[in-house]
Length: 195
Ligand code: IMP
Image (cartoon, rainbow, N blue to C red):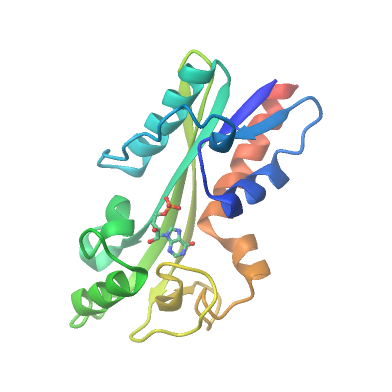
């Protein structure tokens, strides 16, 4: 059986490949199908984008496909930036512009709780899909700390820690992150499917 991962991000691909180390399963990625264009991520939820990416790839390759979409959800901002996390400060924008905007929006807020959320969609070759999610709760601090990771990592302190994701070792982040938690669920789902 073949499973195609809907990403052209080598880092994500290696992380996912390590999880899908099942006998009889060949893991490929969007890199192996350069003729298939990337889908436009125009959904208004993480679920909609993940499903669109997985279903499009599954139907056009005739294989199972997996896609993910992640975002930062801040409670005092009604869940923003959420699905718009990558382009929160407008397009084109940098991680630094996004972090600056987040700090401005939260300047007068006492509730700084937030969560990162990943939604992973799996689609069979006919386009029947299902989603699984992983969440990592934490708080947004008032200034940037640390240089590891990417995106909002320098502002996010996960629950149970005093360092930001950008100060923690990548090994720790990769164990407790929203993406890791979603992937653990997908791994359990997939091993049931292969039984
Ligand atoms: P993607 O769906 O994984 O590409 O994530 C979309 C956007 O959410 C990224 O561009 C980041 O702004 C933010 N994001 C997702 N995961 C993380 C993370 O682990 N740390 C920091 N920012 C993240």
